[in-house]
Length: 210
Image 1 (cartoon, rainbow, N blue to C red):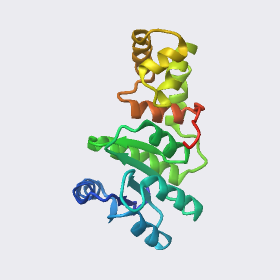
Image 2 (cartoon, one colour):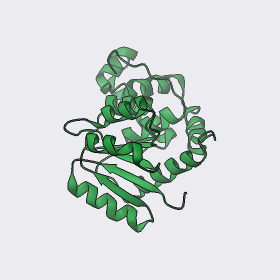
Image 3 (cartoon, one colour):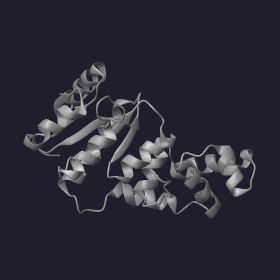
Image 4 (cartoon, rainbow, N blue to C red):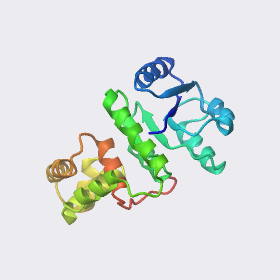
């Protein structure tokens, strides 16, 4: 980790900004808060390189729009998305566009700290193969063809009934496969499953507009 690891928190929720700042500063991070995406975007060109933690749903400009603007302006801040909504399509869009992680609120401190550690490792060695990606690929290889089909449906945000209809199996069978996928991938939540699948390089079928 660099000697002065900068973290920029962009969230319209003041309590969340204060909570993250307190947590991260006690761990040695240099934290600067922004209450909106436009405020960060205006300051970004003059800021030291660091990791960006951004809420996905904000007024004026949401986290995905900020991500697109940073990419268009070639501002290379490693980005971690946080949200209070279990919104699978948004998670897929953010991570397909280059976000390093997707974390649901409320989260335990270790989740953010582990994610930041990985982000700064990537920042220090951008061309190195991420060990987490290798581990995720090994887990993905354990899935049967049918389990991968169920996983593909989950990553598209489809409910169990829709997956069952597409695969011509019962909803109960989908539930069984879903539990097996979560177990083999060692995922504790759907958002974690998304992160693992994308890290492993799984190609997702995106619907138009996503």
